[in-house]
Amino acid sequence: MNSFQKIKVFTLDTLFPIHCISCNYEGLWLCEECLEKIPLKQEWTCPICEKNITPGGRVCFHCRKKSFLDGLLVAASYKENLISSAVHYLKYRFAKDLYIPLGKILTKALNNSGLPLPEIIVPVPLHKRRLRWRGFNQSELLAEYLGENLTPGFSIPIFNNLLIRKKYTQPQMKIKNYFRRKKNIENAFMIDTSSMSFSPLIRGDAPKGQRGQEYGMKKENFLKNKKILLIDDIATTGSTLFECAKVLKSAGAAEVFASVIARQENKK
Ligand SMILES: [Zn+2]
Ligand SMILES: [Zn+2]
Image (cartoon, rainbow, N blue to C red):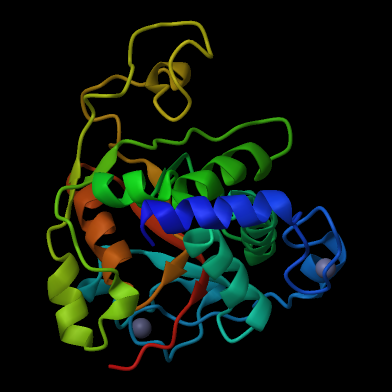
């Protein structure tokens, strides 16, 4: 979508108020009632072999050696029409506020999964070109929602700019071939702590997502032995998450678990 089309979408949304994408209820992109009806996954499989059933989507014993990622919690099915259209509206119709109901879905899924709470939440970054185009990073919005809502009365640190996408890649969803997808995203990420604040400031001084100082962290090896939760909207082959986990593990993270709203059919 070019900027002219963007303006068109914006104008249409302003002239014609927001309606629930399912029942047409005015004022919300996805109303509470429709949100409640979306079934969440109750059983998960290992994200690598996609065969063995594991608690919360942990990587199974047989695949452990092959993976930097420790698990992938998938909240709902991509086959649910409301899920696929809500993600589509969020990403391509710029319905930014949809991060709230989708964030609720992720929060619920994580609370139901019985997985331990992470120490740090890291969203999968967008390349700056795509960020400019969309105006927001949907994974960042979801991560922020989780950080505030996963545990009542306590927020989990989110590091928005810790991972950066150094390679401009084609959207994984657009590539049909599994090996080309893998190749497309290989070594696309790196760690960058330059935008993070580690000085002993008062809470709230540094921008949200950069407040390393809040948690008594030191810049040197602050990821060491940490349990990290990676957030993305949709997983396809999982290659993006595996690549991010590789970088975080090489910086000393003890565990990297990922969570997504849904996983698209993975035809190897
Ligand atoms: Zn509705
Ligand atoms: Zn497995």
